[in-house]
Every structure is written in C-alpha cells, then in structure tokens.
Image 1 (tube, rainbow, N blue to C red):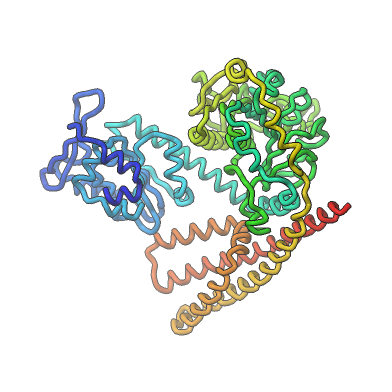
Image 2 (cartoon, rainbow, N blue to C red):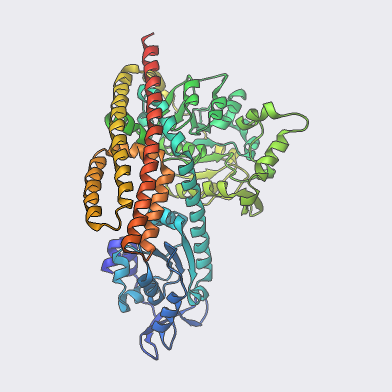
Length: 624
C-alpha cells in the first residue's frame, strides 16, 4: 500500500477506505500458496480466480504463454490476488509495463493484505484501472502513449472475465479506442512537424505585432456559447443562428465562416489552425472582416496574411524558441486535433456556460461529410461539371476512407457510419467534455452520440438559455486594443539572427560528432582506442547539450527520426545482446540519428532565413 500510495494515491485511498464485506475469501491452495474466491454479483455463486490446488504453478503457466520479447505494454483483464500479474511482471524487459483492469476494490484490498506486490508499484510499471471511465483512462495512459504504440498486447484472465464480463469488455474497447487515438496523434505529429515549424516561423510578424488572447479569459463567463462546425446537420439549424446573435457568443470554424456571413450571421469568433494553403480560401473576398480570428500559430501563414480583421495567435513553444520566452509569452489554449476542438476550447476559455454544439456530427449523417454550402464545397467548384457533382465528391470523400469505416450509434441509438479519424476526434472531445466545469449541450440534431453531453434541439437551447442579450461592454476590448503594433518586430528580427548564428555552431558540432561515430565503428575490436574515442564523444555531446534551444528547434524538424530513435532504444533494451554486438547496434542507431539531425539543421536554416525576410518586410511596411 505504501508503494501504491506513491504511484496512485487516489486509488490507494479508495482501497484503504474499502471495508471487507465478506464477498472476497482468501484460502490456502492444496499444494501451498493462496487462492481467492469472489461472489458473483446478482447470484449466490462463487468463482475461484486462481487454482484451488496450486495457484503459484497456474500463475507460472499463465506468464509462460506470453511472449515478452517484442511488446512494451500488456493489458491484463483481472487482478485476482495478483499472482499471475506478478509472474508476468518478473518477465518484463526494458521499459515494458502492465495495465491491469479490475473493478473489485475489495479484491484489491485482499491482494494487498496477503501478497507482496510492492515491487510492481514501486517502479510504476503496473497501472491499475478500476473504472470504465474514458477521461480517467486517457489521463492515466497518456504518459505511456508512445510505448503503447510500439507494441501492446491484450491478455485475458478467464476467471476474472466470468465475474465481470461487461466491465472487461468495456475496458477493452476503451483502451483499444485510446490506442487508435494515439496512433492518429503520432502519425499527425510526425507527418506535419516540419510544415508546422515553417508556418509558426512565417507567422512571427503577426505573432509579435498583435495582442495576446489573455484579455478573453472568462470575459463571457456565464453566457452561453454556440460552437458551430461544418457537419451535415448544420443545415437544420443554420437559419436559427441568426436569432441567437447577441444572445449567445457564436464561435465558428473557418469552413462555415463565409457561409454564415453570406446568410447575414456574423459570428463573434472564428478559429483556424489548418496547415494547408487551401485554408486561405475561407478568408478571401469576405463581406465582413470584423469577427475576431483566434488561430494557432501553426496555421498556414497565407490565412493570417489574408485576413484583415482582429487576430489573436495563441501561445506556441516553437515561437518561444525562435524569439525567446519573454518576447513570445502569451496565453494559449489546449492544442486542438481539429479546428472544431480549438473552437470548443475557446468557448471554455471565454468562460461560457453552457457550451452548445451545432453541426458537430463526427459521422456521415445522411451519407455526407459536409453541410451543404460549406467552405469545402466552394473549394470543389472548379472541378464540378455534369460528370462530377457535389454528391460525387462527397461520395469520393467517404470511399477514400472505406478501409477505416466503422459503425457507431447516433443520439437515438441508430447505426450510422463514421471513420477512424473522426472516431479519434470523438475520443478527444469526450475527454474534453468531462474536463470543463460547465454544461455541454449537443444541439447538432444528428451525428454520433457524444458521452458527457446533454442532447437538446437548438430551439430548446434558445428558449432555456438565450433569453437575455449579452452586454455590449463585453466586446469593448476590440476598440481598446491596438491590433497592429510593430514595436517588437525589430527585437524579434535580432533574435532570429542570433538563432541563425547558434544554428551554424550547432551544425558544426554535429558534423564533428558524425565523424567520430563513424571512426568508432572501425574500432570495435580495439577496446583501448575505442574508449578514447568515447571520451571525445562525451565531451562533444556535453557541448551540444548546452545548445538546448537549438536542439529543440531541430528536433521539431525531425520528429520521425526522434520516433525511430525512441523505438530503437527501447527495442535494444528488450534484446538479449551484449558486448560488441550491442555496441555496434548502438553506433548504427546514433549515426542514423545524427545524420537526421544534420539534415534537420539545413531545413531549420531555410525556415529561419525565410522568417527573417518576412520580419524585415513587416518592418519596412510599418515604416510606410
């Protein structure tokens, strides 16, 4: 219990407060050791969770059936007295860990009282999950996401399954869904890391010359917010939004922005975060540009260059690395997987309650992806003709994802299709809904069922929550702030010039490192000379580590290489190799990584040079 308190204090407290009720009986096995029986809920039947004859031998057989050489995570359904879990734990290699799903706190208390399990919890390599709660599962597993992605295995404990089958089925689904979410997040990070850095650097002129989002924190506390997304169900409620202007804070995603303006609906906020230049089209030729744009700095810079209304860019780590924490400091929001997530986080940041979702289908409602007239439909117009219609384009959008299509339930319990990507977005949303202090209402009137929301129609929301106008002084900040202040641009340009000088020195050190590592591959059979080279490598590594800011910036260029190195390190720890073989594999890993770092320095040099040119252009423009 002492070890568990250090690893998971809340669970340890719950177990400690759980008084024995007779439902769990521990008794000796016929050939030694201890076994346990539990009562089955809703019946007089009892089930033994371990062998009544030789529980220790049974646990050995359980662990012997599992291959631990290529897995980093084992998900075990059922804890019992922990005998089988302990045997599996003893076989773990490297960084591998165990997740155990067990709902019976009385059973966990009995296990803690009778079996020595301290070693498992002392190293935090055994995570206990006792509730089928999505938010808790995501919170507990998030620090281990990358390891889980490298190799996870589900392991059934049949006796425990017989006692709590529904719980274990729910936990398998929650953890499988979490793995899907992890895979999508990591793939997105790796695929978009370099374009993200370029966008952030190119947006620095606006980042430095516009006010931060800080003034918006809780500015609309207690007032309702309508979060408008581009799902197919939006068409049912879009005209009703006109009546809600001034009575609710209307926050829209970029894809519906122009469509709302054309219908005479002026959102209070619009959000943007997409990497691609196509996003620029959502902000071209607008009838009105007074809506406040809140964007992540990773948004394509053409969007920021195009929009002439008030803009706030959120806090960004790469921007801080570029120009220093003092110059770049500002408030921010949780990173959004999609622009819809960002819009929801903005509504929460504003202090709005309730937050009302509209057009947030997250599924192919009526077998389409977008609401008619959305911004994406407009981008398709050049391709349309009598052989290629909007309906055809919608169908192609779905068919492209046919390999990852899946069935889900709507609010009425009916089946409809979504895909793995949208399902990942749903997982993140449902975790977000459980974290906000206020109410979340799903007024989409279509799409997938969303845990953590109350289902209402938008008309019911208007009647219940949107009766009073929002006071105009809540929007006074727009007149008071200077939306284009160039005074920090020159300081920012000087910081970028400093980063370029630091990068040149860093690149030189990395080139020296690659020469040393290649020399070492020829010295594996000459230990004395090899060890001298190790001393040189260590000295150079210390020098490189002092350049932490530049290393972090280069790391943003080479996320795939970082993932490959992380995987290679962990797999090397799993492998039973030593001596020259291990040293050769370590050198191969290091050479491959340093080569990727050098390539990343060239990419970063180009990005910083482009950033400096844009800052100089902004400075000249401000002078005129």
